[in-house]
Amino acid sequence: MNLKNNRGQFVVEAVLLMVLSLGLLSLGLRTLRDGNVLGSFISGPWERVAGMIESGSWEAPDAAAKKHPNQVGRSLSLDPK
Image 1 (cartoon, rainbow, N blue to C red):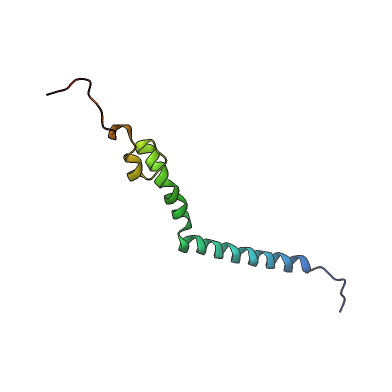
Image 2 (cartoon, rainbow, N blue to C red):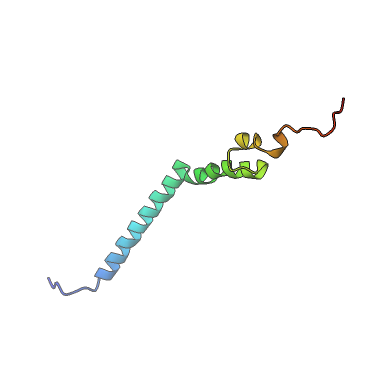
């Protein structure tokens, strides 16, 4: 057996790297799909953004609505009795 013959080594290494890459890609995609990772990336921060959009405060929409200026009791300059 001639140990200095490397003609097929590149092909074997390329095939092994492709199999490893496809396996890791498959595992990663399955993890993302089953764990609903993308959904948590979007829905988690969206709670605070929704509060800022609706009421101008970086909190959940329910807590931010209580801090909106329209919710503050106003004193009238003239008494409408």
